[in-house]
Length: 507
Ligand code: NG6
Ligand code: CA
Image (cartoon, rainbow, N blue to C red):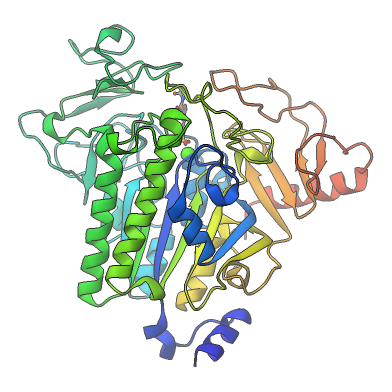
């Protein structure tokens, strides 16, 4: 039975309805700003990640996996819709009061799981906007439309990032633990009369001070991007965010198990995005200060959820995907000593550039797939894979056919993702923070000519990848160092032609 099931998958054929009861739960863990080199099994120094390493040992560890974009909002957009973010206006890094970026009529990964009879949940960082229109959300009532219109039955989320207001979780569209004595107002234009800011009241920054930006409203002794008033007892404490996300994940999984339904959980951690302010029990767990300690906390989250799955007897029937939304960043705007304490740890591993960049460090990410008994244990796969393919591949796994026009950039790469084939994509399209589209094949990385500064201008010490001439790097050597564009005009032309084709609207 199992053999035929696997051979059907390998042939890329949809599963038969008769196999419905064999469909696994799917736990999709998406870390934030975790670089290729940031965990033990990818070469991290100065921090131990035993749970992630053990997850990798139980499944396939990919070495050539890519986020679609080098920042969060466009990367997540592509992942959840199967559509490249540049097709949709307004997919740049979103403010905390942005309106919903994926429209309710778009078909999402969660819709596909819902259609397959799964309980669907989103827990953690959202950062894809909420409500009908920017700035019009009712934070004291129900924020609508919300994730239920995108296929998620249950949602417990941060609207944007921990460094952006509002600093509260929303559960089913309402502020979790709402404090009626402290009504919430949010603005990305101006402060509210009498409210302190990081800029004017540095003496109130008892937990973290900004290194660039992040000097507006103060919550929990940390100043943020944007202004907010109120919140009272509903405001998060940064040191409790990971625990809160893990606790809600456990509850969701437990509820799905009691209901006897398979689940799809999109578990998007706050770690290791700024402000990095892990719980005291993780302090000093790394030699790298708060950034490394946040990695230890992330590792704990993964272990905690896996332990819960194991206790419920669900581990063997759960497909776990672990990855990150974009490459790493060291100083991303707070004085957390991340740069000073890095030692010989290389957040982007062997890749040039980091978050925001058009170089590979912006989008090369750790990527682990585990499904005991179905995915080979302890395997390394060098197949070229892109997160944009998760949607169609997972729909194939559950035997769900996607509506015409949905997930137009997502391919079924299930055999590669399950470690049954070592052939992945022929190329991946990548999207830098400055909207530069680049292309990676197994061998080459191509960055079209682009003017503009070579370094990011607003704080992080990161190369943009800009050069006024085309760049072509042979990725069989570890660092994008020797530009071979002039010597390989045919390769450059062929790769530019693919980009020209990919940028056109899909029919
Ligand atoms: C930048 C923020 C950075 C981070 C990033 C988004 C400043 C100076 N920097 O604008 O700290 O929040 O946006 O990160 O404000 S992401 O991972 O969510 O894309
Ligand atoms: Ca991110």
